[in-house]
Every structure is written in C-alpha cells, then in structure tokens.
Length: 285
Image 1 (spheres, rainbow, N blue to C red):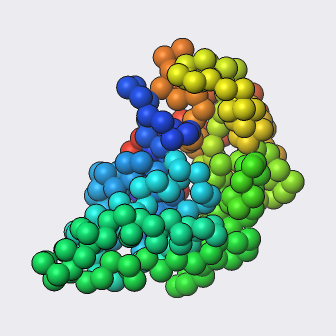
Image 2 (tube, rainbow, N blue to C red):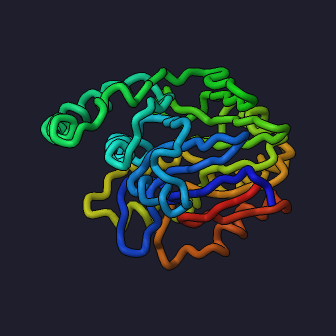
C-alpha cells in the first residue's frame, strides 16, 4: 500500500450542517513524508485525530479561499493543538485577509490564552501561526515536496485556488471550490489523483427549497461558482487523470439524492477509477 494518501475529513459543500449531513470541507494529505492540511472547516480537529494523526503532527496548512466552510475552525484547531503540546511554529498559507482572522481570533480568546501562559507555563500562541499569503505559482518547495497554487473560478471570491502537490514522482490535485475555468484541463492534467468538488445541478433547487430563508441569490451563486458532476467526468477524461474522487457535495444529506446519482452523472464522461467521498475516507495514491 502507498505511503501517500488523502483523507477526506469533511465532504459537504457549504457551511451549514443538519441531521444526516456530512461535515464541511477539510482534506488531510500525507505526501513526500509530510502531513499537510488543506482547509479547516467545522470539525477539522476531530477529523485529524480520527485519522490517527496528532494535532501537533501537522507540518503545513493551506487554506484555499475565505469562505467560512474552509477556515472556520482554523483558530480552534491551532488553539487545541497548542493545548495538546504544540510548541513549534506551523507554516500556514492562505489568501490575503487570513492574518486578520488569526489576529481577531487571538483577541477573542485573549483571557484564556493569557491565563494558560501565566498559569500553565505554555509558550505564546500567537507566533505559532506563521501565515504567508497564497498567490498563483509555487507556494511551497522543500525536501522534495512542491505545491503549486492555480487560481480557479469561484465568484465572487477572486482569491480562490486549486492546488497541485508533487513529491516522489506522484501528483495530487485538489480543485478547491470552482466552476470550470480557462486552463481547467491543464491544471489537473496527468494527476495520479484528482479530488474535485461536485454539484448536481438538478439538486440545487432542492437545497434552496429546504432553507429557512430561501433567496434566489444563493441559487445563482451555487450555479455559477461550482462544477456539475457530469462536466467533471468529461474534464477528467480529457485531462487524462488516473483516478477521480468527489468531495464538497452540493446537495448533501438529502435522502432523494443517493450515491448512484453522483456515479451516474460522472460516468456520463468518465470510466476510470471513481471514489464518491465520505467523511473520514482515506484514499491511497
């Protein structure tokens, strides 16, 4: 079995959870001897531990964009890792504005943080997050692991990125949240594993109808900012990826949309290895 793997800690699209739904998006990657967390949605700390990885064992964190379902639990994750014994800085790469989130999180937790430093002898928490700005191009290149960020298409957010991770001759691509965009095929071409968000266009109206306060603006956002599963299948074939896994499902947790709906949609254009992701699922590549 390969030493390189992806764990889908949460596969739900969007920030809300309900009975029967999955958790929002977070992905844990083991590649090139490093443990990388991509996004930190609600439930990420529990998800990391459920993979047998201590919170103090994360080597790098990348946040793909500043929608809450991708970074809501970043502060609590780091705080919890700190209480679990984290004393070394953790590199964090994320879009402009992520440092403001961290600063305000520290301010909101100042009483607890200061108390634990004084009363328990803990190291200062603030310097443990070494935040760098995520932009197009190579964002990490150390000890054989190279990570490239590709600006995708997730309007109205401009700073939204897919990631290409390479190590040991293997290539993993994580789509982030995106609709099809110029260069989409090239961004994922030849990936040993492509983990891509997916939407069932037919299910979007069901999502909106189930909301307490439905608004047509949300429907418009979903349709213009995400990728229909059928389109994804065709793209994966064109780009020559070796295996495909789906995450960030829209809709999610609705009994009328089963795994077969996702499979049937993707299989319109893709005949290769296919994983319909679920929370906690680990995929070797």
